Length: 539
Image (tube, rainbow, N blue to C red; front, side, top):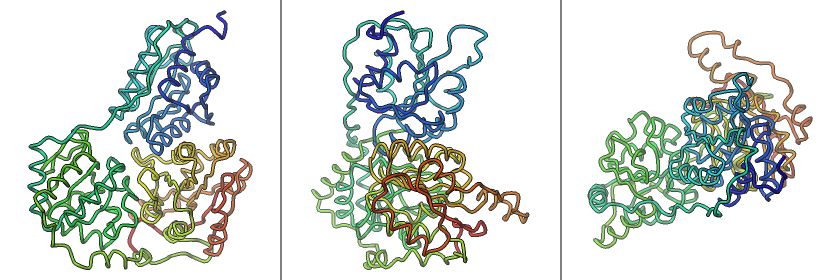
């Protein structure tokens, strides 16, 4: 047997991760990955162990999104790989820079855990890379890391168990990846874009997560254009506090925002996708010329009047300089009192509070939490009918402080993602989950307890699968089959080592708010709601 001082393949893999700047791996140990996890820890890295493989990948996903860095998860082969499939699909559709390390089974036809890992990755939409020779492990990892960071497509990185006992060849020390800025805007594209912008009377700027690092530059351009600014859901918080901040644009818009965007004659889209929710199935921008800027040509909208492939910051800076140079007068078509209208908007006016004697309206809950939670917080939501309330009413200070797990519309991924986000940020992280999705992975609360994370888990507990309840009601059918009798979330939370309380009234919610100033260990709020109150519909 080789000694632990020999540079075997798993240790070279672990060393390559450290050389590339990876300091944290989320995983669950098995015979396909145990050696490189042990070696990674031995080399000074942090291994965050999860209860399930799916949660490990969700943690790496949340860590990457909030930390704006590479996420790394490690699972074993066979069932370890199949257990993480849903979380991997979510990461693929979120375009998270993520690598999942695994190791294919030994070459034996009767191995019980044998599985086609390439096919599994293909089903998920992820890339796949198999290390074929021991001497290639470090170089292969280096190439895959750079590929993932450039493309935003997760990769399943397979180091077969057959190679684990092989000594790896000496290899040069790898350098951490620095991709630098994206491309500069082309002169012709820039000229066409400015032609549209300069002629607009009621321009609006829409920024997404891809514009998160260019806030000041965008605000300067907005001032030159005379344009209000808004964001996609993933750009949430980018312009918080600005007098002409429209907030989230699309199906989640306030009435003032929807009217302003609907009247726009030009929309400058920066680092954002134009999905059906942002455009309200295309109707919101129907009367506007769209100028779309993104560093990735594949993300540009085919409906745009002008598409500009460029780094958002570079494009915005160039546009501003040229407009200032020609002394662009700015637009005059927006209402003179728009800032006053936005300031006067009260979100409580958007709905009728339908809290009961012993239940709370989820919208009221989120507005109350928004007022008492520390502003520098991270918010992560699972998915389900409840999400319309936190998406509308629970704010963040910056886009990278917000994550949702609705890219694959699978419930149950939120808590794991929130744990990874909390590890990345080190700040108070609020996980908003439904009762059905929350219960699916509630055992991962023990991981948060073990790590001592500042985590608040808000369970919107209406005793039902909310979307299915809605579908049955809309179909004129009895919704009772969607009702569920759950075990007590508070008892489970406390058994797992967390603090936990039940919240049924506004008074209880206010008392719970007193705990947020110093969350020393995970806190679970079991917020009781009425399933007949649909927070996604106007009331």
